[in-house]
Length: 194
Image (cartoon, rainbow, N blue to C red; front, side, top):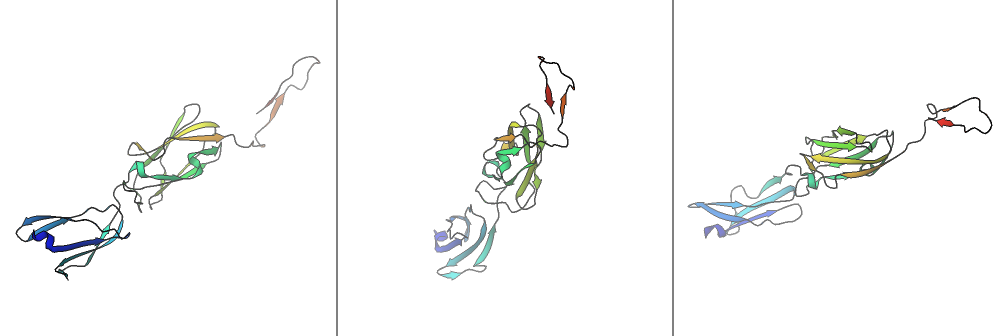
């Protein structure tokens, strides 16, 4: 097999050597195929009896594939807890199905937030144009919230998240008390704080 006479090598960023498969197309033409799962710059060389062929050595850039929801990751407290009335934040990072970071934007993530009264809000995280997406959301209601984040209708890794939203501090400028100014001995009295 003349295809095995050629020494074809691909050396990548993690010193991975790819295994090539040769197919004789016609006569003296051979096709070599390889699959790389790691993004980066690869050096390819093709030699015959130790001598580089024309165009060898050369460089091949391997870019990330399309984003895969199951491999995307999230950083930030907003995926686990928050305070009513204060924006909870988190950052999503797009990755392809091989775990490679995607260094550009363009993906559309959706965040579906359900509060304790089962009211839902849909938010589109802000594309930072570097493969990261920032999500900020606030709820006026304390209690358990469900946060589902999807890409192409599929949950990102860890989604749905249970977000514990705690009651916020009282705003004394709008908090007041109500009660009747007169009361009688022996009667129950009520003071309401709003």
